[in-house]
Amino acid sequence: MSRITRTALALAASAAIVGACGSSATPAPAATTAATAAPAAAPVNIDIQGFKFPANVDVAKGTKVTWTNKDTAAHTVTSGTRPNKDGKFDSGQLAASATFSFTFTDAGTFNYWCQNHSSMNGTITVK
Ligand SMILES: [Cu+2]
Image (cartoon, rainbow, N blue to C red; front, side, top):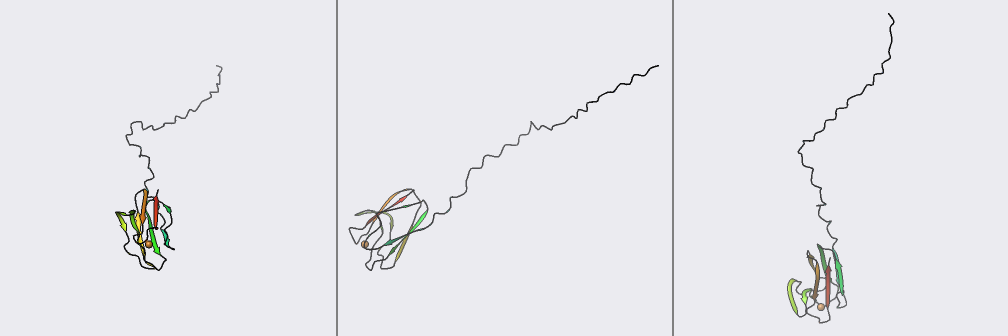
């Protein structure tokens, strides 16, 4: 009785059982849009000096603008186009060193003028 020894190469195929959760109904989380509030716009200061407003000042939405009267004469910061007040803001009479602030929340071009001096007109552009 001859014995034939066979070397059996056993291919150990490790059965990797992948747990496929194909039926998982978990909704993918919606792509989180950058819903964080824009950083607060830095405040802007405008000096009223020499009976002048700056011709135009560009600001970002949400900017608080503060005018300071550096003259000795009183001025006003009145929204609208001379001689029409549009009612958005009006400082009333600003004595020397007095300040007036307004926060611009909407984009647009905003004209303002001084009721005391016909040459004083300014614009704020909000972007
Ligand atoms: Cu004035």
